[in-house]
Each structure stands twice: as structure tokens, then as C-alpha cells.
Length: 78
Image 1 (cartoon, rainbow, N blue to C red):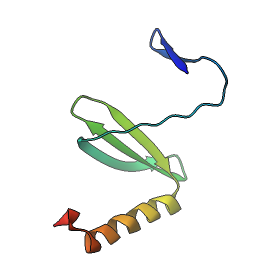
Image 2 (image 1 turned 135 degrees about the horizontal axis):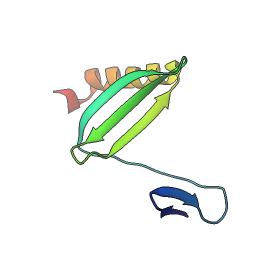
Image 3 (image 1 turned 180 degrees about the horizontal axis):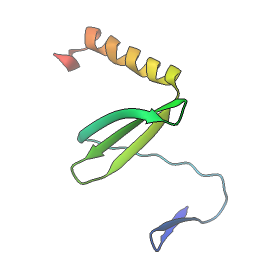
């Protein structure tokens, strides 16, 4: 468990933690440089909730390839 106290997250219990974040109905998506070696993807919804993910270039290439495959094989982009 984690605990919010005065706007800060504090560890409660053992140090082995697992977290999951999901953001649906994204209103804004952006990609930008993050340091010298990574790309940061930023997603935000209309309520101001935000998820940021920093990926190495090889992981970004994999995501781009997956999207390209969906564009040609899936009705999602029709």
C-alpha cells in the first residue's frame, strides 16, 4: 500500500510495490525528447489527469510498427 499525506506519496508496508495506471478518453497526446536517450509520451484527458511514459528508441519503434500494422489490418482506422 501507499498513503497520500499532505500531497506526498509515502510507502506503507513492504517495499515491493506494483502500480498500474489507465487513462481512457485521451484529449491530448504528445511525444518529445526526454534526456539524451529516451522519448517521453504524454497523454492527458479533459480532467487534467496525465500519464507520462519514457521509452528507449527501440521501444518507440516497436510501438510505431504496431500502430502501422493496425492501420493496414484493423478496422479501427477506417
